[in-house]
Length: 201
Image (tube, rainbow, N blue to C red; front, side, top):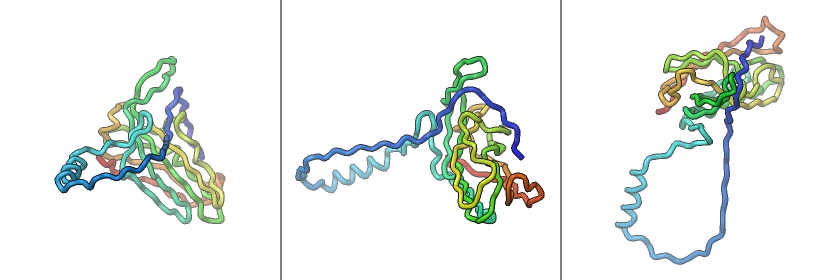
C-alpha cells in the first residue's frame, strides 16, 4: 500500500556531471628529476588535503555503501550526498536556501516472480535529531511499487533537513519495507528494513 506523499514546490537537481577532454601534445625529452626534487614533490602531495567531490551544491560522502539480498531482491545504496546550499521555491514563490541529504538506490529483482517495495518512501532519522517521514518529491525518483522479474530500478531519494547542518550528521537511519509478490498480495510475509549507517567524517 502506498503511503500518502506531500508535494513540495521547488526543484533540487541531484545529478552527476562527468566531463573529460584530451589534447595531443608534442613530447619533449626532459632531464631526470633529482632525488631532492622527488622528495620535495612527495612531501607536497602528502600535505595537500583531499578535496571532497562535488556536483553543483552537493558534496559526495566518500566510502558510503550498503547492500542487501532479500530472497532474490537485491537492494543497494551506492552513493550519498549532502548540501547546505540547496535553493528551492517555497509555497509563497520565494527562493530560499535549505539543507538536504540524498541517497542513490539500485533495486534488482533476480527471481522469476514479483516483489513490492518502497524505498522511495523511507522514513529518515538523523543523528542531529530529525525524523523526516516523506522524501522531497521534486528531487526523488519513483522507484517503489511492484518490481517484475529481471527488472532493475535506480533513482535518487532526497530529504530536506528542517534543522540544517547536513555536514554535522554522523549517522542516519532509514526504514521501509518489502514483500514478495504483487502489491495486492497483502498476506505475503513482509520484511521491514531498518538500517543505521555511519556518515564518514
